Amino acid sequence: MVYSTIKPILISLILFSGFSLGQEKPKKNLNPVLQSALLPGWGQKSLNYSDRSRVFTYVESGLVLSIIGSTTYANILKKNYIAYAVAHAAVSSSGKSHEYWVDIGNFSTIEDYNDEHLRNREMDDIYEVSPQWGWVWDSDSHRDFFEQKRILSDQMKQVASFGVGAMILNHMVSAIDALYLKRIGREKALSVLPWVPEESLGFGYTLTVHF
Image 1 (cartoon, rainbow, N blue to C red):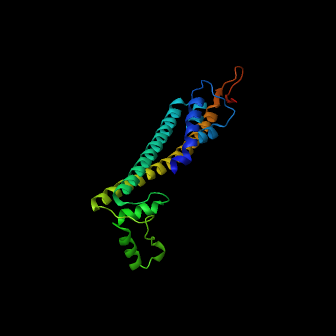
Image 2 (image 1 turned 90 degrees about the vertical axis):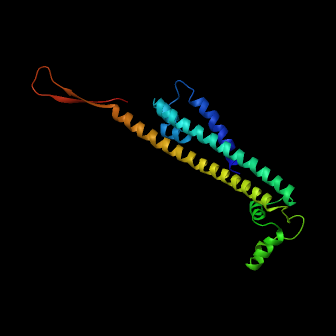
Image 3 (image 1 turned 135 degrees about the vertical axis):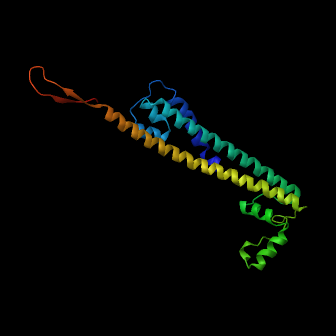
């Protein structure tokens, strides 16, 4: 499950985000690039780019909410379509893989499924005809409704997976942006000013580097 895997990470990020970004004077003993890699916007905050920090923070928060919402909805749909199959196809819900739920949505009975795979000589895919594995839909309309809910649940899980990928990308982009801002800060600390001696002709330049 996507949500069960990332749930501890998301909770840690939310708590850490509220603590670190809420500080008026964050500690700067950690490289801003690493800060933004860990928590998007943190490095920008440390470099005093509050507006850019908020952008990355808002994106991260939106992705977290999207992942939690889509995964929660996917799990609700899964529980519902399993209960629906138990009521309308007389299936036993225990010990079933995702592939099983895909199969019962495509065939009205276990016999129809087995006959199809026997014709294709796919012997390894045959189900044992028993109360544990059998199913019989009471109508095609109920089977179609089940299949629609099952597909929607899978789509919501895919949205959550895309959200995780987008979160990783947001961390990477934030780290790159922090590196860019850090280099800009170094360039701003380097100044070249014209210098004219008071008692001689000519001129020169003063190179000033601030650390």
